[in-house]
Image (tube, rainbow, N blue to C red):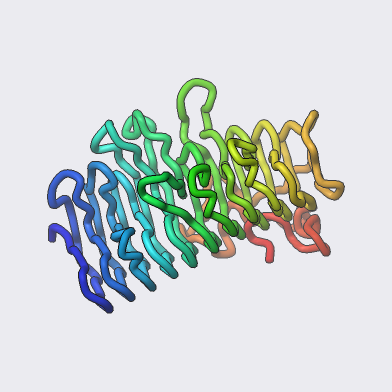
Length: 329
């Protein structure tokens, strides 16, 4: 099967194998409201903005449901264009830079009201992403496209093999706001250029206010989450709580907001502003971080490698005594 262009409402595409229909052509393009894209295998899609699944931005499709798809070796895994999309239980695997003149990412998010949960974003290889700064999630704006992102929830995702876990920019329109990251695992950043053996950062924010980062686990990434003052200084009102930082050069940098009750190990803290209840230098005692999905190979089960061992101080290190990291409340 060589793809679909959806131009009607309430279309359901399920259980199909979809591959390349030509350069710069996506596997499924959404230009209708309330579509369902479920249980498909979509692979080898490449070119400028070509994705396993995409939408037509200028019609702002509403209410898409994209679930349980395996998207393999595509230039982009998914472009979310529109309003109130739910994207869950997808395996977006091994993004591939088919055309070296274009970037490659797991998920591009534009629009409002989207929920991304229980997705597995992984498998990028440095020798297949030669010019890309591959992101797990990316949003940006510009004067021509009028892209923006607002009221976005990103929760319970496993994200690995990236340069940036989230790259968010809102410098032109200054319209993006309110993005929440909770109970995600960002781990093992992808080797990226000289000086970045394990990626750059799990979260980078430019001119987006009200970004919330709570109960996430960040493991083996060059730097911590970073709020950049950039052009307008709008990356304000950050909340950074109940997270675990492990093996990175600093825990976090933010402009203004609240950061507290975080836990860090093998993290440099000298010279950085820290929360009064943050804990550093104490091993959180992961079960087995070399096997994140655990023996059963399934995310978010009791044998996962980033679960905390019994006796971990992280079990009660969070605000009001809750567990820190991705398996906290």
